[in-house]
Length: 264
Length: 264
Image (cartoon, rainbow over all chains, first blue to last red; front, side, top):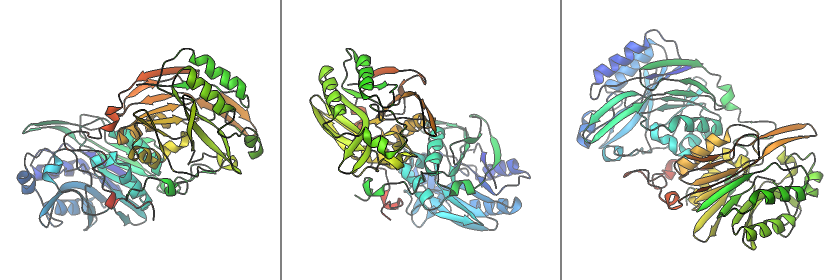
């Protein structure tokens, strides 16, 4: 199957322009899965909860509409980040859309830094979306630093982790090699580029979007300072075989009876 | 405090010569914690369970005697790997010795490849050894690929993970950067060098022993093909502060209520 990402450069607060940017980058791509950055619709650097709220939408808002149209046009599954309003809360979420349907939404569990001032942390567990025969899990940006996120998705059966991001630090890409190795899954980290100077914050987003293989290989690595689109072919059967050699199976070899009980 | 490793080149089956090698490398080092490789007393490439058993010893055998003498001589705590016999089983273990005392033994939980033919997997959970004010956890080689090992040690309070190894693959050193970052602990990976050609196996051990900092920095990196000794100063108070910034604490931010339950 063919999977890829768009490393976009969203303009803060300009949803329509950000949709347009993505649309112009797609042209006639043929792919099975496309990952867009975290908050690709709005940009990242909110200065108040009220401001973040002003961009929030549900699963029938402009982002859903845009992604549905896009996924129909290029006949693919798309995962991309947006500000979600659900009941009285707003979340840093990623929507998964396939053909004419919103399949669901992942709400970022581990909020980074001031995100905690605007967003509520995800209120539901990681989940797998099965599309044809492919199991897709979603995590967002800072979720990478908690090994339990990717581990949970892999144990739930993920073949691929779609990983929208807005990275400002240099650690994630190497860590994704470890995440994929330890779980034998593929991952698509779709980061953004560009700068945002708002309020007290000045963020420079670091690009280097990455497609990481089940064996830790880096299948695609974007530049750090420009918009970039890439797709690669992957073989998901590789991600289903957790055997490292004749004696070791990464899941069966776990000694959960001796691990520190996370429920303590 | 000062911590370090000896990247030795054990000679298969020659305990006395392997002790001598280590002794000659120590000279007048002053350190608080010294880590030796996995199975530094015997070498690695056994060809039968019987052969491995023939080198097995308890906590009052020649390895304990040697490490006690050594730790008295240089006034330090030492962690090093050996073949342990306990009741009717043998384990790939690491002993922790401080001054005149064997404090305990860690039995490798995740056995690699044919080790499963000779050794029983560890039969007790990871544990912390408190020496003066420092909390030391132990894991052995392939344990690195299971994020639960380092995570368990960190949640139990480890400041430093002593990590004896006999690595033949190139992934561990980068993964240890992730392990230390995600847990904000120090780690000392003491690998070995040299080759062993025995039975059907031919292993080339890959050196590159590494001391990794709580923030993912590499404080020491040994060459890949020669015996090497190194020590660095570390500040364990850094490993006790799990705050990344004003808003994020790596342990408090865990959303264990949504992680895949490892007891399932």
